[in-house]
Length: 167
Image (cartoon, rainbow, N blue to C red):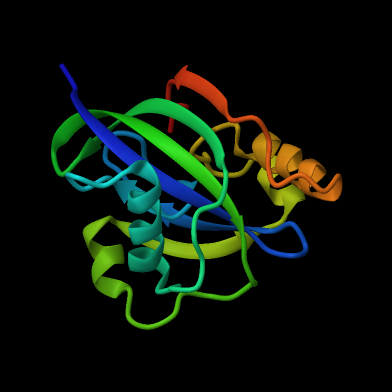
């Protein structure tokens, strides 16, 4: 039996289409790359949780989650507890930069190993370590196309449960 957990993340895309991702590790799923985010605190909306997590994990206080990109559910183990996490993932534009200030405590607590900007080609590389959500490359392509047409985002995609790829 898995414990339900609510979470929210923000996909940050730079002017050239690169995406900021964090490399995390987990005993159940292994190393993977995901947008900044995490658990929603009691009383927070998913958007508020995404904003707080973005600040905690990057030190960026000038960015806010934009339109909802997708929702999905997946399994992993958090602090020894098997969870089924339901995520709201938002998208926003931002400058290409690294984390600001000391985010080491948040990274240590969440087992964040590294960060980097991924180009669209790197996101689509099937040999890359797993991405969360696994459809991230397609979602980013759709958002960039919408932005090129003058739209703020895409109609959110609601995936439901997606199994983790083997590691």
